[in-house]
Structure formats: structure tokens, C-alpha cells
Image 1: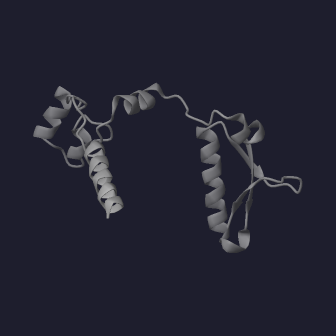
Image 2: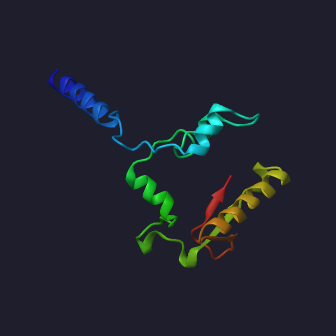
Length: 133
């Protein structure tokens, strides 16, 4: 019984902490957006004119700094990285159509463009690889 009461109190405390509002994090809207909100044009979405991140997201200072800084956030531990940023992969093609395989590979190329990782097909000597099935 005591354990159940303690767990319930802990749950209430966590909810209160996680649900507390962010203080003074609302960004003021721009005069241009306010004018567009007063006279919306076809295709204008009000939520995108709020002045907040992506229209409706209020960020903490830490989150805003991380996004605006634009730096990558990767693993610090070298032991958990792919050697030379190269990720061997294997697509179990009998589980996918040729169009799906092409789409997966397009996704890998997109990841290459937006990160420091490089993807290549698995070779027999690769003990560690990404398996897509």
C-alpha cells in the first residue's frame, strides 16, 4: 500500500514538473506577421504566422540555441561511431519491391548530404552492418 501511494505521489510530482509552463519563452510576433494575420491571403496558415518555432512550438532557451546554432550533435564516444563515418548496409531485397529499394537508397543519399555519414553496400568482410529487412 505504501509503495502504491509513493508511486502515485511521484507520478503527480513528475506531471507537475513536466506540465509547468515555460516562463517568458513566447517570442513576440513581427509586425509583418500581425498584418498578414489581420488580412490573410489564400494559402496563409495562421499557425505559421505566430512567431513561434514552426508556428506552434515554444522552445526552451537550450532548444532554441541548439537549433539556431546549427551545429551537429553526434555521439562523443569514438567507440560508438562507425569507422571513418562509413556505414555498411544490406537491404534484404526479397522483402522490398525494386521501387522501395530505390526509395531506401535515395533516403540514404539524403542522409549523406545532411550528415557526416557515408553509406555503402555491405561487403563480406563487414562484421558490423545495418540490416534493412
